[in-house]
Length: 87
Image (cartoon, rainbow, N blue to C red):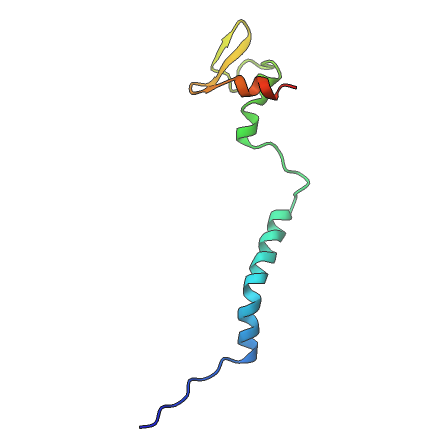
């Protein structure tokens, strides 16, 4: 019994296999760059803004204050980083 050789992939298939990772990278960059000029503030960055500005609304992200100065932003996060970010 004679063995038949396995079929060779076509040139188009080889081209598609080589192009697929680059197409995925290009798609990712395109989606990530969409509206890049509007990055906005993330939640973890916004946590310190109110305390760094002196407690503008006295409600947002301030658990404890001491004579108007924020001490705790959340029950487990202090305000030291907000004071460092102030300047």
